[in-house]
Image (cartoon, rainbow, N blue to C red; front, side, top):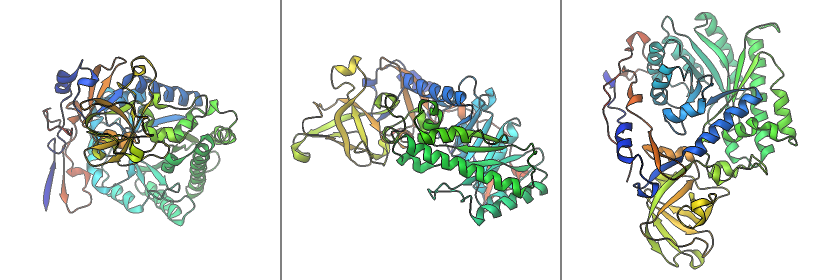
Length: 490
């Protein structure tokens, strides 16, 4: 047997304080490249609009933290009056939220992947350290449930959501399938066996293919499909669990993705949308069902989200609503080398810094803003410059003109801001974010893994076992915060 220690050495991180000492007060044009830039004003506006809209709609909201992986933006997502519910994609994200858990800002964590048995010890250690914390998990296969039951210890309970497949065939089970009904029956039997220490909380839907939506009605159609699947699942659960109409048991349907969440949150602005009216009406059908939205990239937005066109005129989203940009430097220029004799240029941001996905409506792997390239960028609204990232390699990209002569003049050494196609992927290529004010001055630096969030749990497990009894899990033991290697590439 090989024992693997889980310690601070697994996740070296840059120190927030060292980053601030070095970069606070610097102007954007003086930063090294490539780096990720966040416009604080736009971030705050996007977060506040979603919180206000979901509150007005009377539904719950569970923001996803995977887009940014920072405690600072998680705080903005939850707001001062939030109920503390979040979704994470990795155990590390959950552990990194310990500072907010200690403050009571984060109260309820949903692990947003069908449960890997190897993660149970770490999730259990987190739960043991913070008894008031709720940790919910997703299941779509009986083995996940059995692993959880085999690892139960006194004093812990585990709410579970069944992950429903909404057609993307990424994860989950079809609500009409025999696999779903079998899983439901096993959960019912398990609840009785363990006296409710593992219990069915609800159903989790995620229409990830809504990123390919085109227009308001398209988004609402997918959202209604999620809601109907969730309600269908609740109906099956009532029957399987033998519940009467007078039962007080509540069910949660967690649904959404940024395109559908934006459409749902702003349903009141679409009086002409039949699908929107259907959604608003459908949420009020059952008193025992709670609906919550989940979304993550709405905080930053990106070209991919703008392409969905879920907000119709005059409220449509534009490049001014994108909070993230990638700062790159022009390192060479190639006059006349492009298609139809257009110019091209080489910049210091490639797949690692921008992401792997080309766009649907906006061509290429990113669009260069007019920042620093024309006089209007100083005082006017952000707009496209005429340059796009037309080709891409690992650490560099090729800027091409949308049309010959449309790109404007570039110079070697010039810094440019690029709006990425997918903010989640672009941001993950950088170790930290430079948060800037309206004057393009660095106001703060948000590291993805800060020294404060390294106060995670010490857990040991043995290979090749799939899980361990929870009495083998060590308790909370924060390491000494020490700066680690920087993830930043240059």
